[in-house]
Length: 144
Image (cartoon, rainbow, N blue to C red):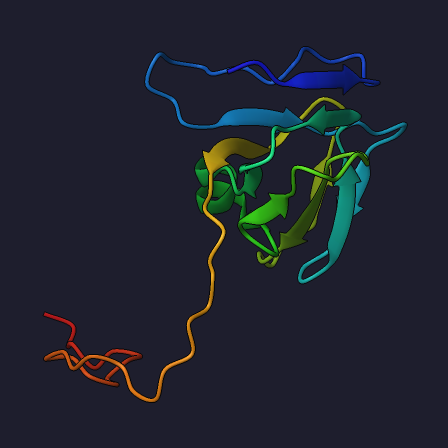
């Protein structure tokens, strides 16, 4: 699949690090370093603008290493970039650690996954089919 992209940063385009990678790393485009205090959030630009085909979305997801080692994650994970959006891809980062975290220009801050999606058509009914689970949710199937 080919996707049109404009890169206004001075960083390389997102790419797959391995042959089996699902996501590509997004890098921060900053004029100066930005520090997130504990529980602070900020939209960090990437300098990337894309044109996705209809029927696809780009999902902005946390980087597992950044989340596990530093407590930095994507607040609305996964964030969705719709096919008709033409603005800059921004990443809503939040610092869930107890320490300040400084984001440097060019730092890998999130990953981008391109995914196909379906459009649903609602069919209103009076009742749904029965299942063994029924309306049980939020842990109703147990923990072991």
